[in-house]
Image (spheres, rainbow, N blue to C red):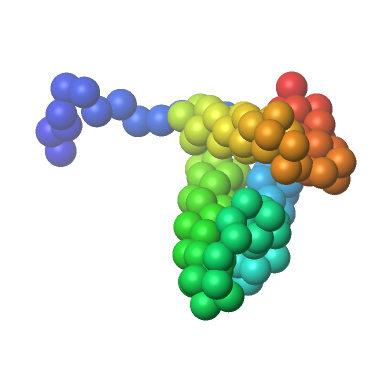
Length: 130
């Protein structure tokens, strides 16, 4: 079968089992957050920042939860694929996904909207990925 000149088959990386299971577990956690979007801290942040009538505030919360939920779904899919395919490219995407998560927590911390538990999550992500 002729292949495109730019096609290159990705080689699997030897990942330890604990790392594969951690990626799977994290993907399942992200899926759980997607399924129940009210479990993320965005609604409290919205209430603190915006003062509006109750109906508008409820619609805003639902919108932010949906957007945040899809963000978690995307991160979960990347992490699951990194554990399943074990290719160098997918592992690099998963690491980048963790760094994006840490950057977001750092941004919230700088604005004063993150709590100590969120900072602990960032510290664990940094320790795990280094």
